Image 1 (cartoon, rainbow, N blue to C red):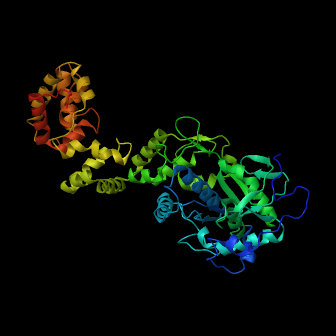
Image 2 (tube, rainbow, N blue to C red):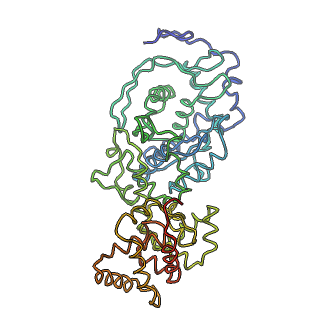
Amino acid sequence: MASRKPGRSRGGSKPPPVRAGSSGQVLTAGIGQFLLPDPVTHKAALIFSIMSQVRVRFAPSPTGFFHIGSARTALFNWLYARHTGGKFILRIEDTDQQRNSDAFLEVIYSSLRWLGLDWDEGPHAGGDFGPYRQSERGEIYQGYLQKLQDTGRLYAKDGAQWFKISGQPQIIEDAIRGRVERTEEKDFVVVRSDGSPVFHLVNVIDDITMGITHVIRGEDHLSNTSKHTELFKALGAPLPTFAHIPLILSQQGSGKMSKRDQGALIGEYQERGYLPEAVINFLCLLGWNPKDDREKMPLAEVVKLFDFAGVNQSNARFDDRKMAHMNMSYLLELPPADFLAKARAYFSRQEAPRAVMEAADEAYFAEVIAISQPKVKAIEELPDYTIYFFSEAFPWNAKAIKKTFNKGEPLARLAELKELLAPMDSLDDETAVEEAIKTMAENLGKGFGDYQAVARLAVTGTNAGPGLTQIFRVLGKDRVLARMERFLAHPPTGES
């Protein structure tokens, strides 16, 4: 037990008097300009009338970019609300005037919308329990501070307002962690000396006045919860159900994933052309398990299955390769028209790819994207993956060159293939072209692969991509033969 603090007593004596004037300037400094009537009883009847309905909240601060951890917390709250038929409330914790940014606030809104996490109450949605920004709730906080003062649980020290703890063990029946017991040993500040309220105070008051029934948040907040239960009880409010979800660990080491880690920011996935449904699916599995080893699941089914029993206690490790694989699996299932639309949108956001797309025939561009869809892992790969369809100055893959020239007589095979293709009217019939190559290879005692590797290298500069005859068809006979001729005349060395 910590030593006794000046200005408080364990023996039950009256707390020191609040400093003169503190019910005015000190308690409301920096927030007194906001006015709401009778905050202590603020819509109390309505709150009690909806307590049977699940009400959860996501309460981000607009002080930085929207990251994976925040998105997962928002998602789990949204899933629980949708699973139970409850309400998902968006509340903005913007009391940090030094770090708040309207730009970051817009990032929160746009990121949630991109992920499809619509909120039932909050900014832009309205609701009966607003305002939904803490910076606009000053008079509500003042009313509850007055209540703490009236019941002897608030005192002034060093210009700040301190909450007098009960000293009693705080029992937290966590829906995920189980029974947790913590005892606060020290009084704590609830209003700073500059008059600004502390997170613990406003968080609890907002949960009370908004009728929040379930507090779903990261495990790192579990250590705060005993402070919050002290405040709930001091204000005569019932405790919500707490559910502390596991942390998301960085890919390297054992620490919590931070905004600086690779793959941490939701905005990056938007810019890179990831599908929001893939990101959501991946986030569902960071700490929750449907219990049947499935990974790819439609969101409607996740809503049906999601509950606290499926949330793990152990921390989840972020893996950007698994995220990429999940995205690829969703890309493969996109209707071609949707994939093309997303490809166009991505090319439009990049200067060089935009110029390529605008210079290309629309039907040709669509055909290139169509044959590339089954092969790429992400939309962002498309500009480099398809460059040889739009330019004769495509790069040469040094590893592919070395691999091709280390086996057999690639130039002789390419010359044979060129001679085979030259008399054909076109290369539009993929099946006929492939059968012709196979027949020639068999007659010469070779295999299809002896021709495929060098032909692909000659016309694309690499050893990966769509099917060889698909590439021939889309590029057209003239371009294919011209590239083969160039390759035979000036074989690449792998140095450029």
